[in-house]
Image 1 (tube, rainbow, N blue to C red):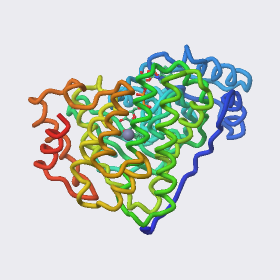
Image 2 (image 1 turned 90 degrees about the vertical axis):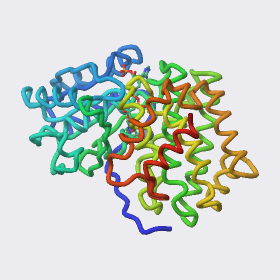
Image 3 (image 1 turned 30 degrees about the horizontal axis):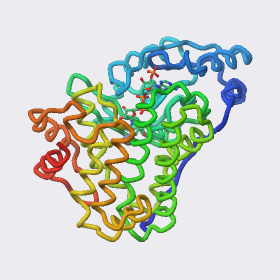
Image 4 (image 1 turned 180 degrees about the vertical axis):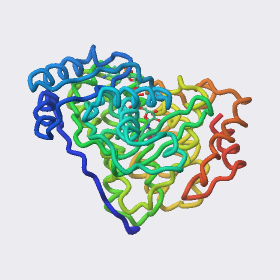
Length: 380
Ligand code: NZQ
Ligand code: ZN
C-alpha cells in the first residue's frame, strides 16, 4: 500500500427528511443569508426545494434564489453567480441538485474571493478561502457532496477542466435518497456508471492496497446490485439508500486510500466528449471508455486486473469480465460505443487534442496522443 494523507471535513446528514435540519445547522454556524443555487427545476418535483424553503423560513434565514445551472456546467454561469453572491452579500452557499449544481456552487464559493475563478482551473491561481458551502444532494453520482473537486466547461475554449482544494469541501451535505425517486432510469444509470468509474480510476494502481481494494470490490458489487434493483423498481428506497452511500464513498477519499492518487486518464478523455457535446452525460461517456481502457491496459498489471475480473464479475479472465461489464451497461440501456454516444469518426482528432491538454494523461501508464487515438478506435 502506498503512503497516503486522508482528509475529509464534510458532515453528512443521511436519510429521509434530514433536510429539515439545515436551517438549525446554518443558525448554529451564525449564517443569516445564503445564496441558493439550483439547476433546471427538478428540485420542485422531488420535494428538495420545498423542504429547503420550509427550513429557511422556520429559522428566519434570508435566501436569494438562482436557477438554471445546466448539466455539464459552464464557467459563464459560475461567473454570473459569483457577481450575484457579491452583490447580495451572502454569507454562505446552499447547492440543491447534483454534481453540476454543487460543482458550480464550489466555484462560486471560492470565486467570491478571487479576481478570476478560471485562473484556478488553469493552475495560475490557488484557492485560499471560500464561503461555507452546504448541499442537498438529489442525484448520486459524482461524490461532489463530500469532496473538494469541481469541474467546469469553458465554452469559449471547449475546455472541461477540474480542480481540487481542501477549501471547497462542503461543510455539510444532506443525502436524502427519497429525493432520487423522481430520477429517470437513464440518470440513475449515469450516476451508477460514474461511481463505478471513480472506483476504477484508483483500483488498478497497487495490488497490495488490500484494505482499500476490499472496500472497492464491495462498493462496485453494491452499485451493480442496487442499480439492477432500481431498474426493476425505481421506488425501492433501500436500494436508493445503498446506491447513494456507495456513490458518495466512491469519491470522498476512501476509495483512493493507498492508491497513489489514481489514474484518471478515462475521466480526462471523457471530459473531452462532454466538452465537445454537452448533451453527453458524464457517466454515459465513462461507460463507453472504461471497458475499452481495461482491454487496452490489462496486460500491464495482470494480477490486479484479474482480481477485478474475479471479485467483481465472477469471471475467470479479464476478457470475460470486460464482456460482462459491457453486457451490464447494455442491459442498463446505456451506450457501449462512441457511435451510440453520438460521436463520429471525424470528431476523433479533436477529442485526442482536447484529451492531451493537461500536463500528463494517465498514471498507471502515461498516454501519448497515439495511445488515446488507439483507445478511441477500440471504443468506436
Ligand atoms: O437541472 P436539474 O433540474 O437539477 O436536473 C438534473 C440534470 O438534468 C437531473 N436531476 C438531478 N436530480 C434529479 C434530477 N432529475 C430528476 N430527479 C432528481 N432527483 O439530472 C440531470 C443531471 O444532473 P447533474 O448534476 O449534471 O448530474 P451529475 O451529478 O452526474 O453531475 C455531473 C457533473 O459533475 C462532474 C461531471 O463532469 C459533470 O459535469 N463531475 C464532478 C466531479 C466532482 N465534483 O467530484 C467528479 C466527476 O467525475 C465528474 O467529473
Ligand atoms: Zn466522474
